[in-house]
Every structure is written in C-alpha cells, then in structure tokens.
View (tube, rainbow, N blue to C red):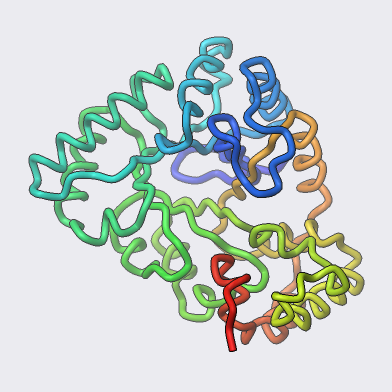
Length: 312
C-alpha cells in the first residue's frame, strides 16, 4: 500500500467506503448488509492490509455505529483516519445553522465514540454554496473547539470546484473516472490541487460501466458502444485489466490523495488492495492519448441516471 502525506496525515491511496456496512447498497450488491461479525471482519481486513482511511456518513444507515463499536477493539494509535458527513442542515440563520451542525456532529461523535472527528464533510456542495460565510464561521468554530480536525465538502461533477478550492476547507470528495474530463479540462481539479486540499475520489468505475463489454451492452446504451470499444483497446495496449486502468488513471492525476472503494466482504477488501498494487502510473503521453479518445464522450454516458431514459 502506498500513502500520501498531506496536512500532517498519512493517507493510504485506498480508502474504505463504508456505506455497505450500514445499508444494503448498490445494484450489484450480492451479499446484503453484513452482520456485526462480518462488518468487523471487513474493517479488520482493511486495517491489516494497510488501509488507513475510512469514509462514512450520517446518511449511511448505522455505518457510524458499527465503526464506533469496532473502534473500541482497536488501540488508539492504530485507528484509521475517519471522514464522516452531515445531512441536510438548517440555513435560516447563523444560530440555526450552528445548532443543526452541532447537533448532527454530537450524534456522529457519540456513534463513532470519538471526542474529535478527524474530517467532517458537508454531504452536498449545495449546503455550502447557499450559505458560504456562515458555514465557514461554524466550521472554524468547530476546529477552534477541538471537535473536528479537518473540514471538507463532497461534490458532484457539475458543481463549481473553484468555489470549493476557495472555501478554506481542508478536503474535497469528488467523482472522477477515465471517461469524464470536464473538471480536468475546465481547471476545476487543478484548482483543488493548487489549494492544497485533500482530494478523495469516488465513482472511479462509473457505476460499473468500465466492466461492460461492447458485446454485452444493453441495447438502450448503444450510445456508449464506441467509448467502450476504445476503452477495451487501451486496456490491451497498456496491458491493464479494466479495473486496473480505471484506478491507474485516477491515481496518475496530480493532487489525488485517495480512492474511495466500498466492499461487501473481507475478501473484496483483499482483492481491492491487490488490485491497487497492480496499478501503474500512466505517462503524460498515455494521459494525452486517453484525453484524445474520451474528451468528447456523450454527456449522457457520464450521467448514469440518464442511461436508460428514452431519447430520440
């Protein structure tokens, strides 16, 4: 496992996403929500395989509670870096915002069994964008009080990453995949990097699209065929499996701190760690080739909610 040193913290290039610990998540979920023993096995396997960061949220069912129970079995010096996220907040005024943030934070601290949250994120960029000044005030107060160490904002690809970069927050979580060059070409990713923020990346597989073959493609997704033909050709050319190329691409972009991948079982954790060990740092020439192939992919391809919508 490789690590990135950022803001005085060593973060593994692979973070464990833990939504699966709290709810039955994802269309490809084969196992359902793990029981307590299985969940602890997933977390233990992550830790023993060098994963030093966990990603959770108040919205992920009882994921925080499961992690908190597990943390009680782990010596404090071996505990991973934990990011959790706030749900919808009250924006009717500074005092109302302060109360709603603190109430949710106190609940997360209780669930996790922590007196200080390593990284507290807003689960939606819009929560920050609609109330920027007050949000900065409240998060600065939390830092000064020692209730959180770092602050962060989770966003989607259509959000303005320059606003995030200028926020003064410490971390961002964003979707990123080999087909989507919008925030690379418009300078959004560079702005996050230049700000010195930790950059956590999710959705590197674009909801499993990288695993599809052109031959098996749903007829309603014919618009993605040529993109997948080009992607499979690159896999052969670079001697990388689809998952390896998808991860290699994300890790080859300057500024990326860690990739957030969830796992349904302990075995999947081990497989993801092994997979990360097989990634390669892509050269500038390879990145340029990928850019040429995918810079103009249909926007519909980049928006899974639109994949099966009828279009003329």
